[in-house]
Length: 327
Image (tube, rainbow, N blue to C red):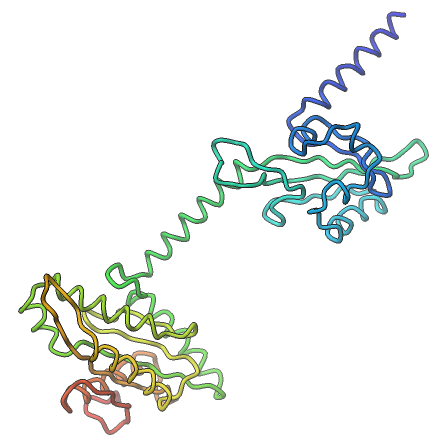
């Protein structure tokens, strides 16, 4: 009699633990019908164990990806090996709302899960147990850390005044493109460099704050005209550089003239003062005669110099007879 009472007590403890443990526990049969459903699952799904008993899991949770779920569960039935899934691979299996106040920014619970084969006395696996872990706190902390690191990385390569790439990162991109072009002859890329004409007059006449507005205005016009493949940067104080990927010089001129005309027809307003200015531009198409990326920069700068010398507010294409052409 005492042994019977002890066994009943142990069963009661096990059932109590099963219902109150802070993980999801559910058992499915070979046809994916629910056989066991604990308190965690009840609390987050709104279904009572009696309501889900014998019901197809896909009918209860229509948001469940059946193809993925079967791909995960079938090897557990057949091979009798455990399987695992983590939130980085799939944010959640069951679309449970997140109620944790610390991670309230997450709409749904992030989940890890373990699929366990359950064998009967004959060794057949006709059921599997799924243990579901709420890892929302861990996931959100990691995502926030990743976002912070990504922002720090972005800031490290971004010019603060213009939000363009800074010179260091832009040159890294240029070097990568230079190396790509040396490996293939089926593409060509042009570099555009331009700066503000008589910028010293803007700074001296209206102050550095006005000069900063002019620099930002140029950057905004540039960004508004960039393609997804173009890589633009602030090269110096009032000087800008653009890598026009897979673009020959003749097409680069079209882009350059669009920038030039947009700036010529616009203005900057500073303390009720209208400030108008123009830009001069130089283009250098990649050629194998540039044995390093620095010479490519020098070629574009040489074309820019020609635009300045010829009266400013114009675009010039580099050729090796220009003054200051790289040797």
